[in-house]
Amino acid sequence: MEIDINEKLLTYNQSLLMKKNLKNVVLLSILALFFSSCTPTANNSEKSTNQPEQEILYDKWTVSEPILEKGPAGTFDEISVKDPTIVFFNNKYHLFYTSKATYETRDKMPHLSKGGSGLGYVAAETLEKLNTAERHDIGKITESIIVAPQIFYFEPQKLWYIVAQTLVKGRPDLMPIYLTNPDIEDIHGWSEQQIIKTRKMNDGFWIDFWVICDDVKAHLFYTDHEGSLFRFESPIEEFPNGFANEKEETVLSERNENEIGRWRLHEGSHIYYVKKEKKYLNLLEAVYPHPTRKNYWESRNRFMFAMIADKLEGPWERVERGANEFIGDPANLFNEDGSKAVYDQVSHPELIRSGYDQKLEIEDYNLQLLFQAFDAESIDSNYDYNYLPWQLMLMKNY
Image (cartoon, rainbow, N blue to C red; front, side):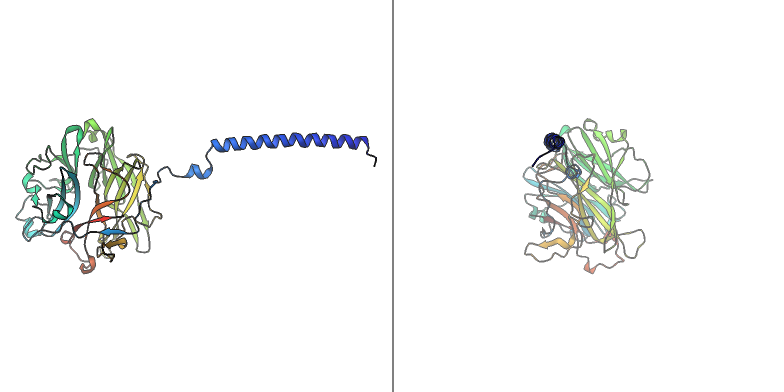
């Protein structure tokens, strides 16, 4: 078959063009592979850097027998024991807690608050022995109202600190305080309480003060009973007075709704450094509104959620799989024999730490924590908060 010369030229030119285009395709493919290896994909860029390598298990918690129960009638902790803070030091567990007495006993003890609250202390070689250890009324010893304590050793000053809250005459709300002691085992060694001075930006309610330090700063957190968490900071060398030089900041606000109803962050934000993960773990208490009392919370049903961050300044992200899942759900509390626990709250959690200093360190996400709770079945909706029968148990997720 004869082929026209113009057709041959056309075929030749098409062949050259195809080869040239093929080279371009290969070159573009190589460039695409190179840049895709250097540039994160959309999925990678959106993935949070805060997600822990080790999963935090929370579908089932094993709960111990009570670690600490109320004291005998007529004593400073005859109604309940709550708000635990604990360290293991010198082969002993040192547990400080809020005590509750009846109004009749309160009237005989001026160091108790108007709600009958005070500060108790016990120490023992094991957790199981705390309930039978000698109890000390630290408020009576220091002649001061001390509630909701936090204990740690501030290594730069070689001093033990209790950070807590108290009532101040002429003020309608709580105030953050601290006491110091060079020897935690000397119950008479605690200093007079001192107000922690801050630059609080408003006169709103604040509660449950918590201090944790990194290498350069001390951080003071509190909650407001409205669903928000706040923070002050201080150069570590200026602790505890440096908070007065820095403005507070709102750390986060957490509110949501589920089939039970509206819930929000309530109080008791407790933060720890997880050594294995190199992250900060924040355990926060949440609450539903009371079913009949307006602007009141439901203390018969409290629970705990958790957040993590790379640094104490945040940002903080939830660790649970869903917004209405909770790391400390009372429905997931079980006795050691596998039966369902009777407790209806996971309230005011305090982790058993691997250390005892101002960094508040734990090893990993195998969590062992003290919490306050009670069986709410026999508590009707007209309860007096100051007479709720709180006791302290240990719960662990492994």
